[in-house]
Image: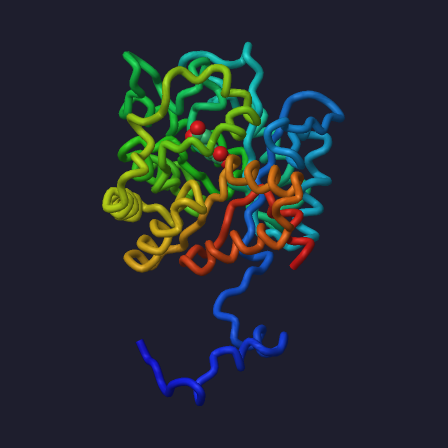
Length: 329
Ligand code: PBG
C-alpha cells in the first residue's frame, strides 16, 4: 500500500472533479469485447416467444436467428451462447437427443457458420439437462448422477457439436474428469482448434430458476443438483476445481453465478493466470429487471454490476443484458 501525503495537501476528490479526469483515472472499463450474449432457440417457424420470468429475453425459431446474430455482430459482441428449448416428447432418461446431428443446436450452429463464418464465436453447453426427462445433467440413478457413464455421452455430444461448427464447448455438467476426456476426443477427431470453456466453478444455486423455465426443464427436475454442483459454503474447493480443469486442458473457465461470487472470481484470477468468465445468471437478470420495472433501479445499475465483475478480475461476462448494454457503450 502506497500512501503519500496527507490532508489538506492530499485531496482524493481532485481527480474526481471533472468528467474527463474521472475518465482518465478510471481503473476498469467495460467494452463490448467483454460481453457474451446467450440466445435461447426453439423449434418452429416465425416465432419470438417471451420467457415469463425473464422479461426482455426471448426464444427464437431458427428462421429468426440470423437477424439476432447479425445485430450481435453489428454491435461488436465477440461470442454468443446457444441454449435449446426441448419439447417433452424429445426428452428421455439418457438425453439421446444431445447426440442427434440434426438437433436444434447443431442446426443452429451450421446455419450461423454458413452465413457468418468466423465473424462471431459460437459457444454451446455440454450437458444433458436440456434433453433429459428428469432434468439432470447426466445419467440419473438412485437419486444421483453417474459420473463416468455420463462422460461417455458428453464426449459424443461434444464431437456432435464440434462437427456442426461450434467454436467453444462449455461443459456445464460438473462431472469429474470430463474436460480431459473431451479434450482428448476433440484432438484425435480433428478438432484440435475447438476451445474448451469449462464451467469449472458452478455452484448449486437458487439463481438458475428462470433459465430452467427458458429451456423447459423446470417442471422435470427431480430433486436438486447438489451431488455434482458445488456447495456455496466453499471457496478452497473452487481453486481445486479450476486447478483440475486447467490440467485437463481448459482454455478458459467460468465462475457461476456472478454477483454473489465476486470473491471467488478474484481468488481464481489471482491464483491462476487464465481467462476468467463471469456468468451473470438468469436469477440475477430477473432480479435486476424486476427492480427496473418497479422503478427501484436505473439502467446504470446493470453497468455497475458488470464493472464489478471486471474489478474482481473477470475478462468477460456472460449476461442476458449483453445486447442492450452493448448499445449503451
Ligand atoms: C445447464 C445450465 C444451467 C445454466 C447454464 N447451463 C442450469 C443448471 O445447471 O441447472 C444456468 C444459467 C442461468 O441460470 O442463467 N447445465
